[in-house]
Length: 254
Length: 219
Image 1 (cartoon, helix red, strand yellow):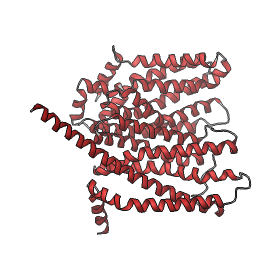
Image 2 (cartoon, rainbow over the protein chains, first blue to last red):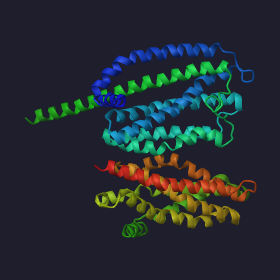
Image 3 (cartoon, each protein chain N blue to C red):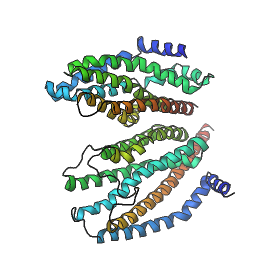
Image 4 (cartoon, chains in turn green, brown):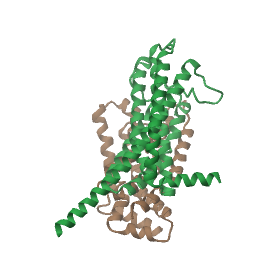
């Protein structure tokens, strides 16, 4: 019973007007919670001690690690939306994965840039061709390719279906990326926060990191809902412009 | 299915097919490298397998946009979509024909380029073997890109951009296996078997994705 209720709720959202109403209701709350979490997280990250080896540069971690997590989570969200597009033909799913691609590219870029800034004092170089860095860079290129593909087609629903297929094929790379640091023993450290047998990171650093990760996740969802809303509005404007052009043409004929 | 295979093969070999242009491009790319890095034979023999692999990757991208585009232009793609055979099988056969026309010549040309690169016999053999196993994976991945871009007016460049990131694992393990055959401590079999696994994996995923994309792009 509860499952069918969830499905009804979910397919109710197929009506864009309902989605817009819901978005208008929850967006201020999401934005407020995100802002509070960021305030707390940033305060906590600035007030912690520096690492005894890395000094103050360890604070880059509070931006770098959440952004890197988000870059992969965003692709997962896109893959789920892609399944929604292909299996249920859910109209919002089209909008969702189209809106998520630029966000994913942005988070990946943040992760790459902060990682590069952190790598300079720690490893002595801006960039190494290590497994994790290379695979994240490839992820960035994939996001850009998907954006390019979406822009290359003028029919939005066909563009959505075709890019959904490509998203799903590209999803193969996500597990490779996640485990690249465990499989290839390279310069980037292996996963230390989420792993079997508990975290190896000290609680001093763990708490700010978790708060920042939560803040980044909420930031992503806030921006995602906003981008979806904008996309729906953009499509409505396009449709109305087309209609206006058609009507204007009819007037001229008369 | 056999008829389709033969038809595609004939189309790719005869005039305007562009299968041999791929080999020519391959040879040209590899020949340009010594101009860039200098004619140092020791250096060339060390980076030889990687150069041959990258050349093969680039030239296998070259013919991809023709895979479904020509069929769409003369209308035979609609016939392929309408027939009662499963579309996945049709796409698989088309991939095989495309590989025999475009991929196999690259494999055959690679020993010659290996000689140019001053690689020893083991390295040449290993590179040829990994290319033989790895290039079908490139074709299968490329089929998805080609099917996605079939409706685009200028799809050729976009196909390359979309396909290259997905082809990276093939390149990694292909080059890794070639090097492992030459250098003593690293075993040859593990990367080679992973390469085989990647090819078989994409042999399933590639035609499935391409068939799905063709159905969706063509309404």
